[in-house]
Every structure is written in C-alpha cells, then in structure tokens.
Length: 98
Image 1 (cartoon, rainbow, N blue to C red):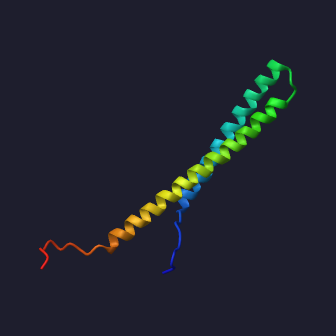
Image 2: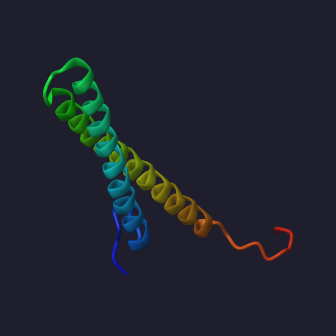
Image 3: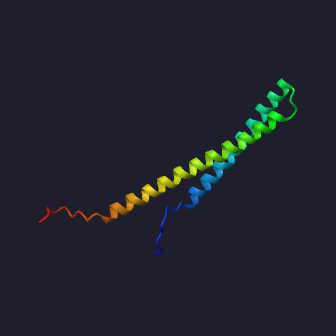
C-alpha cells in the first residue's frame, strides 16, 4: 500500500470540480459580456466595458473554482483524519475493562 502524504480526491470529485468550473465560467463570462454591452451602449464607449466584464467573469470563475477546490481538499483531509483516528481506537467488544 502506498504511503499518502496529502489528501487525494476521487475521480468523481475531480469531475465535479471541473464541471463546476465550466458552468461558472460560462455563466460569469456571458453575464459579464451582457452587462458590459449594456454599459457600452449606455456610455458610448465602444467595447471597453465588454472587455472589463469578460475579464471580471474569468477572474471570478477562477477564484470560485480555487475556493471550491480548497474546500474539497479540506473535507477530504478531515475525512481522512477522522478515519485514521477511528481505526486507531481499540475495538469495543462490550466487555468491561479489566
């Protein structure tokens, strides 16, 4: 058995993070685009606010994904520690000590 030094995530958890990133990226970029387009039309600024909106959407999606991934790693690590602690306890056979 390999000695694992840090938390590892399952394939399902990795796919969940990747799909969350894709959905967040799509929604935030499209939202940034439309808000930027509306502001550009309102202030007659060409594509300035569209670019700003799309960039803010990209940054927001990346930050959200990093936050989600860190939370997942904390959960996996706490689950691993709880499992290690539980397996280190002596078995309770129902008999009083002595």
